[in-house]
Image (cartoon, rainbow, N blue to C red):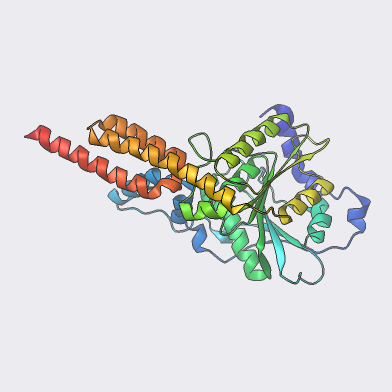
Length: 358
C-alpha cells in the first residue's frame, strides 16, 4: 500500500466520526452506542468457520493433525466480554418487516461510529454494527469473520430484523473480508457491499468456494461493487472479481462508481446509492443458472477423472498434484469427490508399500 493510500485509510475513522454536513447535524438522531455482547452462535464456532472457508482437503488434513495430537479447534475464538461493538439504530419505530442490518468490517482497529452515514442508514431502515479491533492487522478467520457473525447474532437478538435484508460490507481490506464472509455464510448475509476491495472467487488465486449447498445460496446473493472512480488499482481488482463471479455463475451483481472519490470511505450520497442497489435485487434466469452450473459440473467431472486415471496407473505423485489442484479450484463444490479420491489414493499408497516390503 502506498504512503498516500495508508494516509487516506488512516484518516477515514475521523471522517466517519465527525459530522461534516449541516443536514446531518440538523437531522433526527437515532440511538448510537458502544456495546458489549454476550450471545454466541453455532455459526461462529471455529470448526464451522474452517469447514466453510477452507478447501476440503486442507480442512481434513488439519482435523487429522489435531486428532493425532489429541487436540481440537477451540470452540469459539472470540471472548465477547473483551470486545466492543458500535451499534447505530435509526430513530422511530421499526419498519414493518423489521430493520435491515449492515455489518461493517473496517480496515482500521478503532471503533467505527457512522455519524455522517446516518441519513442513508435512516432512509433504508438499516441498523449499523461494527466491531472494534477488527482491522487489517487482525487475523481473518480467528477474529474478523467471527466478529462479523457475532455482531449479526447479537443484534438480531436485540432488535426485530428482516432476515432478507441482512448485509455485510466493508472498506478496502475490510471489504475483502466481507466478501469472504458473504461467500462462506450466504445463509446469514443476503447481500454484500464491496467498497474499494475485492478478490476473485475459486482457485488458488481467489477465495475458496464453500460446500455446494452454501455455494448454491451464494449464487443468489446480491453483490454490489462500489469503488471511487479515482481508485484505479481497486477498480481493476473489482473487474477481475466480477469476471470470476460470472465464471462461477453468480449473476446478481451491480457495479457502481463513486465519482470523484479515491481510496476512501463512501460519502453519504454514494452510500445511499449503494444501499438502494443492495435492496434492488435482480431476477435471475433459472435456465441460464442451470446451464451455467451444468458447465461447472462437467468441468469438475473431467478433473475428477484425471485424478482417478493417475491413481489407476499408479502415478501417485501425479495423482496428488491433480488432487491438490482440484481441491484448491473447486473447494467445497468437490467435497465428496475429494474425500473419495483421497481415500483411494491412501489405499493405493498403502498397497504399494505392502508390495514393496515383500
